[in-house]
Image (cartoon, rainbow, N blue to C red; front, top):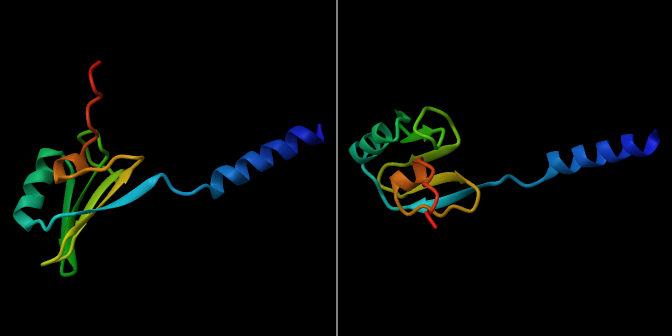
Length: 102
């Protein structure tokens, strides 16, 4: 009875201590208008304050926080995406790509 308990504790500790699967990607400089348009197209939530602006989506065409792009005025943007994706545009960063047909 003791061994299964120890095993479950070990699995839980490793799962909670694992590194995040999200990654930060640097994107090109984007205007507020471009960000609003891309955010609307991805059905995300646009936000803006004095420190910058950004958009968050669920990566599936809805509001959420799985795919996030933030920008600072007169600087590049940072996209936070899940997994091994490497988006090169706002649209790719805010939505999950369709599976490749084989």
